[in-house]
Image 1 (cartoon, one colour):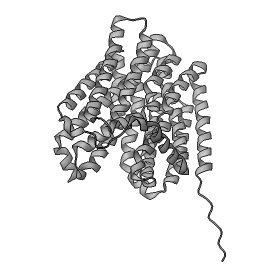
Image 2: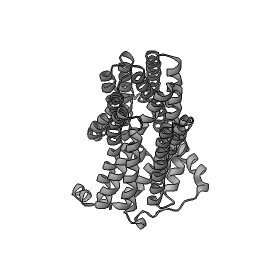
Image 3: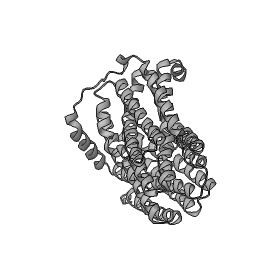
Length: 405
């Protein structure tokens, strides 16, 4: 019944379709930015800086974006962010057409702007979905929202890689179109629907962040899993840089990069179907530990072979396990903290987990510039193995007290 109601909710379908297409465009240029840096300047370090620029807003802007989404009209905020992203991707196209000497600087600045727009947009989108559906439809609506990420990664990375083969600037053209489409769908909706429902103050930014971090740190399982997830995100961002550099140096077509990275979307979609059963069948501690060790095995597969098929299979597994981890930790956080603290806990955790992504991009670029891809893969495997061992040490079940018979 709820599914039928969602399919009849034109406002939700318009919001979801516009946002999903925008996410596809964003996923496409997330590949195109470092690929373009490698194609123009043959510099893994610069590619790392560009990837860092696109993802560093995840580290800096999560909590302020959440507070702003609660205090301003969400439709207005989403329109502004989409317009900013459109200007940034248009600047890349213009710099390329004019063959500017400062193209490298334009790439970095544009990547920062698009990454910032993405953070504000995705957080505002959660509230916007709530605004256009009623209580009966919310579970299905948020399930659709969760599906956007693997769909965007799957379609965006595959299409972005294929378009890059046709023209270095084609992924940016698709991204510009996706921004325009999303702007039109948002502009067609009544502004009054997206009015804020909570008051807030920018002065509460630091207290809110500190309060969320304190709560997160007080719960051992959430503390350990957040730190481990942040570290693994950093490792896997290095793996993405590895895939890009190997493909470029071996003169492989860019569509192979898109297919390899899009495999994570396939794995994520499949995992989303079975994770609810896994979450009910196993304790969160056991499930998380199993995921970390599976990640380690998949990284060993990458270290053994950089053949496109092996990379695609391994990366698909990484995406599947990542979905299991994300859902498990989200459910655990919702159960472990008061409802009024959940938003701040999620934001605080995102500072650690998502904030590690730009660090990984930068580290991966310099690591690949200093060593060979094979050596880089081995270093990453050792790091992941160390994380799995430490995770096992800190998350193992506490011994049961002895009883007198």
